[in-house]
Image 1 (spheres, rainbow, N blue to C red):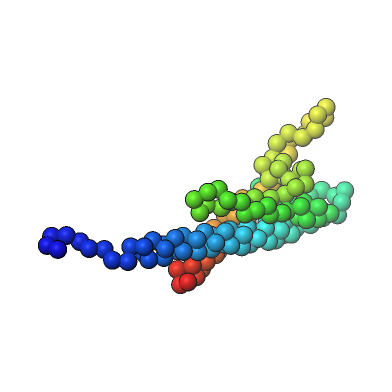
Image 2: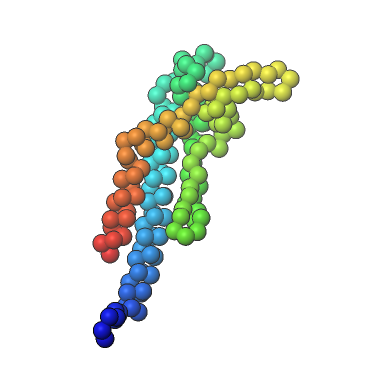
Length: 151
């Protein structure tokens, strides 16, 4: 066959690629779950950096994580997911269920008749930034994908 290309084993190649795609999808889901729980633990550590008794002023400055009082905010940090987004993409939600969790993170105005402005005391963003900067989150995915390639 002069000037042409003959491909043998195309069916086998397609099957191998399909198996690899399934393997990568499984690995990505597992890595997303692992990374989510890694972030959950780091957020909880961040919320444990300082504490004070109920009824006493907080020792944390604006811009620092809120101080631990009862532990409700820390206990409310949960992971939901991972959930598929399609095409091998996964997401998970990690954060507080305590009603005051958002205003602690971002700051804002509280109350209805007697309004108070609370400064931001972020704890989610710094925990994520720490794990991203150290490469801990990327490593979780790299290890999972290396395993998927080896299968």
